[in-house]
Length: 322
Image (tube, rainbow, N blue to C red; front, top):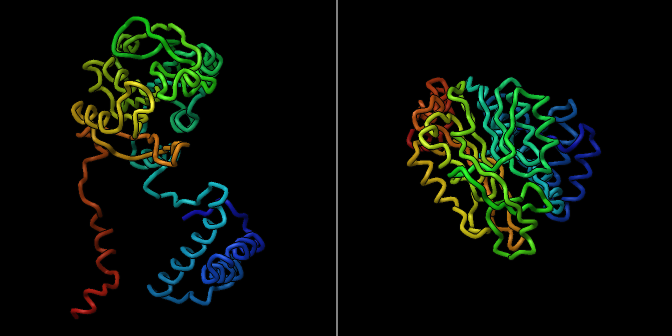
């Protein structure tokens, strides 16, 4: 577990404990104990040899974790474990690399302002960037200089032709679909060229191939534009919407169903955000891989060594029956 938001100074944790005391004195006292002890070179009272000491240390760290989060909550912030189920892009790519899954080709559809964690994780990959908004051209040019990249200033879709895009003040919110709130949010309507992805990509792609799609509701249209070449995609990350916040867009279940039929399985759940209306989950990024991917070659939860270690742990059930 890594804690990033407080410096290693005793007063930082003392201050957090003081702020929390009114809410939960027991947690605050444990936080003060940790600040005064084990974090700064002195053993905690609960530190003992063996399994009991490990459990006590974990309990103390958990208490501090809760304490810090109580302080951060009013600011809309929260500490999370780096191995928490919902990872950000950077941690997810680090996980992939730990499994020797090193992307060689990136197809980034809906570049907008860019996604730095992708470029940082795979700086030597070949990039194909697709973005229809003219205002993003300077960003595309910079990425072309930085990466082995070429870009296409078009919308990706199911057909070659022309489509109208609604360009928002927030460029990343631009979409070919209109908002349910009405024209006030739709921005400026512009005709733009639309191309199928299978007409933009070269005949051969180096694997693994990673396709990222963030098109504000047009994700399935982009996938349809791959035709049979969808089978060449090894990793897919796309934005899914819980509710039809734009007219005519697919929602979470529609996208998962389409991808399942195309031979993909959900592999991870990444970043998302809540809607302003009521705090309900609005959108989430899904990572999917081929059903026959090496990333899914094991169905077990433990390795043999991990299982052996797990079975050596004290068991209340075994103790009761023993």
